[in-house]
Amino acid sequence: MTVKERTGRIIRIAGPVVEAEGLSGIQMYEVCRVGDEELIGEVNRVEGSNATIQVYEETTGLKPGEKVIATGAPLSVELGPGLIGQIFDGIQRPLHILKEQTGDFIRRGVVAEALPRNKKWKFTPAVEKNDRVTQGTILGTVPETTTVTTRILVPVGINGKITKIAPEGEYTVTEPIARIETTHGEREVTLMTTWPVRQGRPYIRKLGSTTPLITGQRIIDTFFPTAKGGTASIPGGFGTGKTVMLHQLAKWADSQIVVYCGCGERGNEMTEVLEDFPKLEDPRTGEPLMKRTILIANTSNMPVAAREASIYTAITLAEYFRDQGYDVALMADSTSRWAEALREISGRLEEMPGEEGYPAYLASRLAEFYERAGRVETLGSTETNPRLGSVTITGAVSPPGGDFSEPVTSNTLRVVKVFWGLDKDLASRRHFPAINWLNSYSLYVENLKEWFSENVGKDFVDLRNEALSLLQREDELREVVQLVGPDALPESERVVLEAARLIREDYLMQSALHPVDTYCSPEKAYKMLKIILKFYNQMKNAVDRGIPISSIQQMDVLNDISRLKIVPQNEFDKRFNEVNAKMDREFSSLTVESIA
Image (cartoon, rainbow, N blue to C red):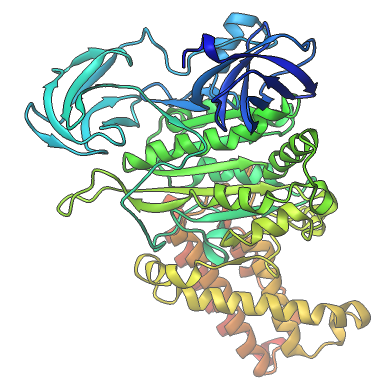
């Protein structure tokens, strides 16, 4: 059908949901232009020739009788050179272009192309005429930034022989760079392709999660690590530091591409991201962090329906770079706001509500999103030259009142493998990151044990388990301490409390604002934990010899241990050896006779 033949009219309006008639042959998730201003919308219910459409823009002023045009295509994103460093809204409109067109406030119905059409990119071919290629084969490369090279892939579904390949030179995203002869005729390939956001991009096979995503945050990398291609959730009440944690992960995680999706967050928080990221320096390259980052900004005052689409836009962009062989970290802040958008749209559709008003399909939608994470062997891989890529998803959850039993949190925990539970009591005590070590967990620990043993320290996992055991023992003693005070405890148990205090205050507390402590390498974290637990064992031996713990607590080396976290990486080994030797000397000089 032509577009003209598939033009209908509005018969009902309920907030962002519009019902139209006269659209025979329309399909689910098809994009429509709604009203005289041609607002962007997506079909989410079809009944005969009637369609229910969720509109991604403000619907104030729409009237029954206005036209609705069905485009014949699902909501899709443009993929190609020009994505890195961009700031998009929830449906991939570049915000800087919208600002140029409409000023400080986005006008309804405005359309902006995601990839610049007039910019030329230097293309270097990687194949030759008459080469046989399959979907996912690398046709050539485009140096998008100084840190990211975009690999131009044969589009999904195309297999055949190269009949023409463009020579090295500069091309726009719409100019053909190759022609491929397939069984269905010749196909032209450009630097740009499109992909429907609600459909996961295909791959050959999923691989196991055996490599950690190093974040530079001690409590995460040591106690509750996530893996490349893994899924993690950060639930926490207001003020517990979810957004700061996601900022830290985006800045420091050892991924090659970062996709940060602010879906429904407050405008001031997204403003902080937009202002900070261009100023941040990539610790690995010295280049601005934005040279490997894509931002999706859909704040709480933007249309609610676009919020629901924003995480699909983000995950599709992440999968595109995964297919090129990159490790991608996706941060979603926050999936609670996304779920609230689902709830509002579901209410407008008059669907049967589930728990707390959320739609009955909330759990399946969350699972669909997180299941698109993974470490994969990409299309175009060969036995001799496998290409591996990953998408790691970290989603913040904002449970009302910090109640982890509410539907979004509980359904998220069913599908993710890492749970970093933020604690309001820790946050109120200014203990950051406010991750509660007693109720958080990681299901990747067993898979990653071998990597940590080989790359960090053979006894790394044993040290981790010993530290967690001390923290668990401290929690068991806390009730007794609150009743009778620490002085009433036996010396052996006061040793446990002192060791747990060192772990909490000198290891787990980490300042995101300190120029050195904001990032801690696994090697540095390992040595810090090693020296704390060595101090614990020597303290235990000293107490067994009759040394009072009050004397141990006055040792000068305790201050040196607490300051190891702010020692720069290039000076750390030297300082570690000095503190280690000093501790041995002080414990050696600590005798019952000297104290008496």
